[in-house]
Structure formats: C-alpha cells, structure tokens
Amino acid sequence: MAIDYVKLAATALRLIAAAGREITVIKFNQTPADAGKPWEGPSDPQTVPDATSTVKGVFVSPAGAPALGLQAISEDLLKITVEIAIVHAGSFDLAEADEIIDGGVHKTISFVDKLKPADTTLLYFIGVAR
Image (cartoon, rainbow, N blue to C red):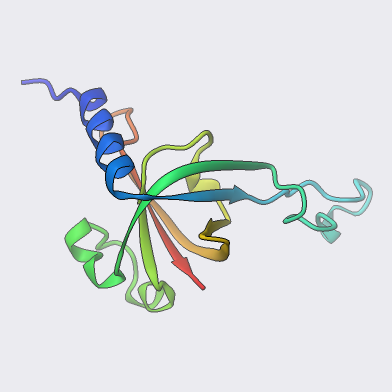
C-alpha cells in the first residue's frame, strides 16, 4: 500500500491554514560587506535578508516535543526554546532560517526540524526563543 505524501502535505497545509497565525520566516544575509575581508561578515544581515517567507504557523509548548517525535532534540536546547511553531513548507528551505517575526515580535530560532518522509517535506518544527 503506497502512501500519498502529496495528499498528506495538502491536509497539513489546510489544517495549519485553518488554525494557525501568520508569521514571517527570515534567512539573514550572509554575504560579506567587503569581499576582501570575508571574516568581517555582512554589515547588517537583518536589514536586507537573503530570503523571507510568510507562512501560517501553529504554536505548541516545548513540553509537547516528545509527543511530536522530537526526541533527538537535547533537553538543554528545549530549555531555551519557549515555543515550537509547526509550519508548512515556505518559499525556501526553512531549515536555513535564522529568525521569525510573530505579531511584530522578532524571535530567534533555536532549532528547525523537518517531518520529511520520502522526498516530500510535510511540516517544519521551528523552536523559537525570545
């Protein structure tokens, strides 16, 4: 019996869209300001990010992480995580994201985990700290 992951992804998107709230996921600019001094990094990576994606997210407590199957995440990492956003795929690989904006509040990403059976990414679990 073959599993239709495309149908599962569509169901996940529908449920998150119905119950979630809009957040912006940001991947910071990593291009050095001076190519001759790449160790100095970008001048201000937050001003002009490499990518942004507006997605819907459902937020849960880190206490629910074992129920989500996130047992590979260390307990120390969960201690700095104040909530976990469950989101559907965005316009770029959200595993590369650095920050989210939720209701105008910037939140740092502490971890990103994917639920990716076969070749289809169904959900991202984004741990955020304030």
